[in-house]
Length: 348
Image (tube, rainbow, N blue to C red; front, side, top):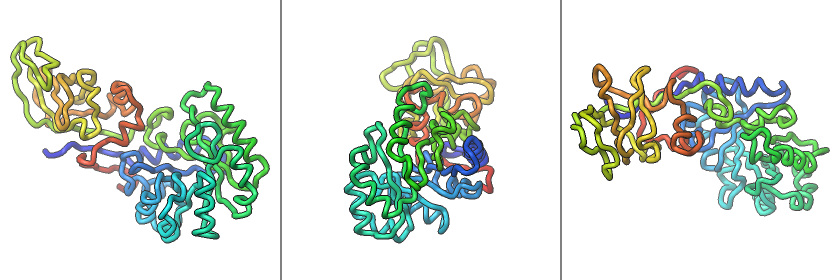
């Protein structure tokens, strides 16, 4: 017994990609977003599995992530950089054959001057006010940009995880107004947009969180997180457990201490609110989640197990995130580097 084990089912991830791909027309390409170390799953194994499944275009946030991904995938698959062409990145973009999504007039000029003829795309702001050219900016430079030959024009939906939100239709209308008539492939939808239906799909979709079976797409769960039990003790009635004495044993209890904590991405807000599992049996967390350790009441178990499960069939990433008052994206990307990641399926 050693460190906590994060088991990742690559076949579940690729099955989620295939399911999302099947929601679009055959002439609509389905890419894969693998930024932030493939949402915490590990970019090397996850990206290779997705490429084997048929993904030919990938999106990451930065040129540095793109350079890493190029080393993983080799020549062939297209790698788009959502952060665009930042100052000082020209050599990396050129040598690693990366395709930046240009977000501003400044980036457009930088790219066209530094790397004339090199592949690029453009991101438009259709109302999210985060990245991309606003309508007036696009109108001012569209002719120049289109003459240079972008490979993709994209935007990003702000409220796609709320299907009835009026912002979705408003952004769709703005995107159409900004791009109708151009002879360039278009993309508007990440996972949530795919679920909104064909009107949002255009020529390419960009699933990210959906590959991991997390909301708003409820697909296969690829994750199982098992935490090792370091020590157990009998805590007498009335005795406290953990920092600040926030929990006192109502009666004599057997308390197990497991190896993981908020340094590993398990939020302190989970304190006293979440359960770990031994098979089908829930075991409540007691006391505060600390940096490296969590204390769990195992009095009702017939014997002390070697491991207790934090994520698995009885408690998904989304359920754990909801308990912590956050979203699956944050929890996944924070799952710690100290976990022993073990991969299964898809030629693992």
